[in-house]
Length: 369
Image 1 (tube, helix red, strand yellow):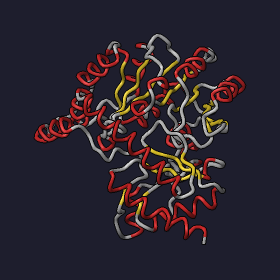
Image 2 (tube, one colour; image 1 turned 90 degrees about the horizontal axis):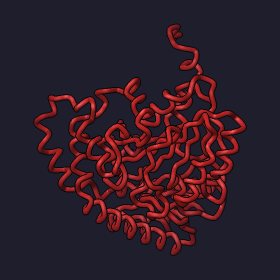
Image 3 (tube, helix red, strand yellow; image 1 turned 120 degrees about the horizontal axis):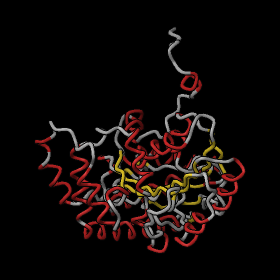
């Protein structure tokens, strides 16, 4: 068996970890498609028709690389937020940008603080970079801002990571509370604020954009409410000098031309975004109703999914999840106790939610049986 002597000690020590098992892999394992895809937090309502048309028109230019400076898209994002183009970095979704942030701030062995059960892809980037993860528990199904700060100070952390609104629970903090955390940051830390779901959140949960603080990065995406998950377009907002450091390490040709064009058109169609956010809110209400009708407790959500408390432990919730998947509906669940007493269901079309409403009572009976 090959020993691969050229591997670094870091890579050799890494487990063979995949942050998520995708629905495509599950379909291959099962040998049949899902009736409803309600687990990946995508927007089934899709991107703006103007975005689709722009990408279709750009298909003939696919022989060209995307602009390595992402100039037009960065300029449009900057105008949208009232900042300078120098305050915007574009990357391959928030995932890609989080990986760059870890490279910028964390040397092997240095500490990164996150919440136990929060977004696992961020943890993956830290592990690949040789950082040491310190995890604090959720409190009342929310990331514990005070505990994150305390751990950051105690461990002399290089990065503190918080998502607001939160995945996987759908919970959120107010802008006032996030701003309070920022004002209390240790002087040598980088605060990574993941705002993937800010478009579906109440306005009071989203702090005003402030690009004056060189210790704060705000991460946004076109993958959720904008409906462009497959295009892989995200962006970071921050102080100009901090943003410029990304140019030292990013993949300059990492963005596809069609993704740049599609995101540009999606950003320009704010009417469609508002319409989609309304449909997502209606879908959340329907999911909450379905949960209550079946004896589950829907948690308040500011995202495009609803997390449902199954009322027992993770073993039982896993049985519920497995029974739902066995009935051809793709959903997911948090992976860490006590969050794993829940299942998490993405908003779908009315037809998708009808399928879920049909399947859920059957799955619960089977899980209880």
